[in-house]
Length: 239
Length: 294
Image (cartoon, rainbow over all chains, first blue to last red; front, side, top):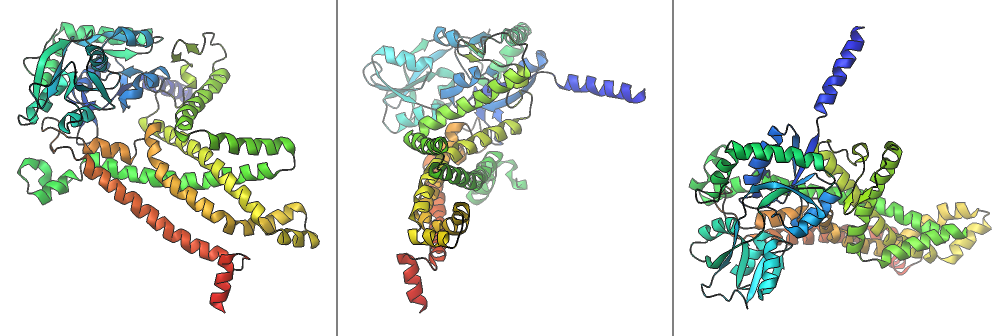
């Protein structure tokens, strides 16, 4: 009899320990949204948001990194369950995957160049591949130069290969700040996209609802705004 | 790593580098070299096995088996590596999951393909969704090894197929005259003697295999190229205790030296092996050895 109870207890523990593990896919190369810290772990604004969302939705979460370029195909084929990688909610992406509500308000994109008079509509502009910024540059009349990572777009401007780079203003701000005056913002900010949301498979409605509920509660008690201010500074747009 | 690493901003360059080069991120980089060696250590024998099987099949007198062997060699050699790597690994992964799905979840009625989603039941996921990260990595690595082995096995099969036919006819006829069966001739005469003919081709493949290891990166395995790129990129003080400019060049220079040293070492070993295998062979190399000894 004892063994039966013990066995039943063990099964219950095993079942509880089996709580759904959600694999969080990110890029790990887009500070301050997500990056690998000195210890080689995923860090940044999205790590903080993701961990909090998982805690509130009572999910066990595991962080994995994936190339930006193939981040959507790897979600749909099931290598991980969410994309939390500074991905703006756009109609094109929404056709392939689903998004939660945004956890970061629609943010401005901006041009950065070494030359204050850079030609932004006729020159060569670098952008990261498959981003809304790349789409915008392609339509602006400038020659689009695409790179796999954010780092490479900056390197292209520094080397003179591109006249300017077009990216999220929040990612560019620390880069400009640290360049010691070499790089500066040029032209006007461009508002793009519908904010940043967590991407999930279209068939994963249950997970999307759980994440949505957690994000709503973080918006309501102001903890999300605190994180935005912590990572993006006092001037950042909040909810 | 070291006690004095607590405040990197105040360190002299030597200590700064001692701390910088031992961060968790750098340790991942060093482990990645181990990944490359492990890949080679597992892939080379596996590919040789595939090659041996392919060559035997291609030589077979049973027509369907021979077609299979020749088909394998022709198809895999003819498809660009990158196409094979990108297509085959995804197809293999989904194929395994689909088979498990059919066996493990017979009551599932929804289609496996829904739009762009590939959907199998949770029990059929490979590896299971809740298994720890290292299992996912090991699985990815195993897929990579298998893919490498199939690709390089096809080339090895072609090399071995040629080497088996290069064993002097007189040797085979003598074996037959001694009353050996075709199987015995193959085991006792052809296989021991074919290596001297196969080695230049196999050595070539080994070199190409070494250079092909960065393709691991395409397969999602975090190899040395991934970490070199990750570590080389410029970092600002906000996101790291060790800010630096764009050092990609230096990290890739390290990779260049690594690959050059590794291929050079391989050449030395292969040269010795070639000399060893030429002993007693009716080839130019064997003849030179015989004259040298006399």
